[in-house]
Amino acid sequence: MLAVLLVAVPVGVLIGTVGVGGVVLPPALVGLGGLDVHAAAGTSSWAFLFTGIVGTLGYARRQAMPWRFGGLLTLGAAPAAAAGALVNGLLPAAVLWLVLAVVTAGSGAYNLWFRMKTSRVREDLPVAATVGIGVVVGFGSALTGTGGPVLLVPALLALGVPALTTVAAGQLIQLPLVGFATLGYAAHGSVHFGLGTLLGVLAGLGALLGTQLAHRLRQQHLHRVVSAALVVFGAFLFVLAARS
Image 1: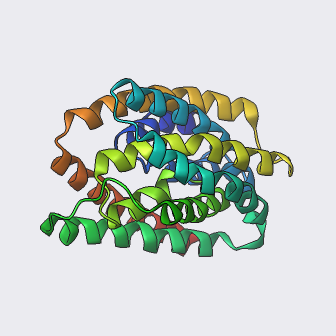
Image 2: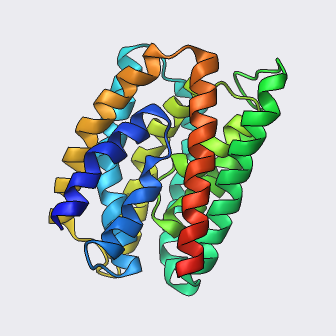
């Protein structure tokens, strides 16, 4: 369990900087902490509430939070998260990791090698499309216990949304998403609130540092860093799928 606690801070740094570090925590709780898959997902969801608060405040303080855009994403994600948490036990873990791996690595590779060659940037998306993306992200993230940015960041980058806007929106969407997801997991007794709180505080400290790092990078450099991180995490998820 000490090893899991040591993982929490770098996970928070990644969440604050590139938005996708949360994917590490559930498997760490399974492999190092001895929790089952469902308890790991539920406990991680509770911990991500802390990183979401810290990340949202950090980006808001620097006036980099896209409130309207993030609010529309949240409108779709919040109710879908509760449904995703309830369905969590119906699908094999290998299937969940494989789907996440394809989406994460594929989007990272696309953005790293193709999207950077174009100048097309979109600061916003149509309302219906934004809410629809929120629904998919909310359901899928709660289903896997990985937190909203793991699916949101690949989706928005692929659609041409700037990296800083994408990561900032990922912080905001975590708040209601993990709240609803935690309620769903708690209904099954799959949340260890004490452990999740400790992990959340440590990860929140890391997220505070991560938001500062993100603002020190130029937009183009941040895009490359986020895209490369997606490829790395996608490969990590492929390994999880193969071992499940």
